[in-house]
Every structure is written in C-alpha cells, then in structure tokens.
Image 1 (cartoon, rainbow, N blue to C red):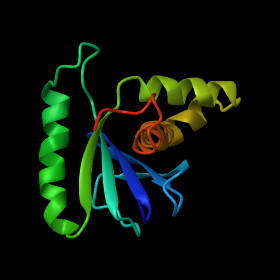
Image 2 (image 1 turned 30 degrees about the horizontal axis):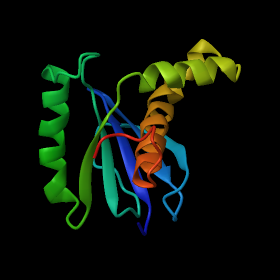
Image 3 (image 1 turned 90 degrees about the vertical axis):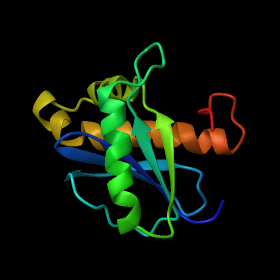
Image 4 (image 1 turned 120 degrees about the vertical axis):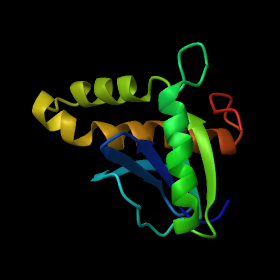
Length: 135
C-alpha cells in the first residue's frame, strides 16, 4: 500500500479522524471535527461501521453507509472501506483514562482516538496481522 489512509468515526454531530503514516504502518489520532467533508492527503478512507456485538447492522450502520454514499462523490479517486468499530470507543476511553486525561478533556478527543484504534486494526490486518479486521 502506498499513501496515507484516513479513518472516520462517523457520529451524528462529529467525525473522529485518524490517519496513518505515509507507509500505512502506524495510526494516529488526527482531529475531531463537525460532520462535514474531511480534507486530508489520503488514498483510502476507512470508516468505522457501528455493528452490534452480534455483528448485525442497525440504524447507526445504515446511517454511516448513507453518509459515505454522500461523501464518495465529493472525494473522487479515493477508495472507501468499512471496518468493524465494535469496542473502539471503549478502547479509546480506557486509553485516555489510563493516560490520565480528565473526563472533560476526553470528550474532545475520544472520537479521534476511537478512529485511530480501528484504523490501527485495519492497518495491521492489511499487513497480515492475525488481529486484523476482515476485508
């Protein structure tokens, strides 16, 4: 893979954004932004798909798919992929709490850290890591 990969944690009001390094090896939180078109020098957009613990898609997953359908024409040339985001917010919260981030401050960054969590899983899966996400 060449080029950066962009991950979106699509919420109703905000987007959590994470980005890989240019080699597609390491994911890092980038930003939490109001829900609008993200701008980043990327080749692929990886969006979190909120599925239930049983793996079923509900209204939130359908909303993410619909949003991406709106976004695709605005970002021509980018490849869009969905990744299971189950427990990414839980992992993000735990990491932030473990890092000593105060509750008030966590609200500002939890979405971008969650996007970083599922982007890292996706990146690991692309490299053949057994903990990777199904393609």
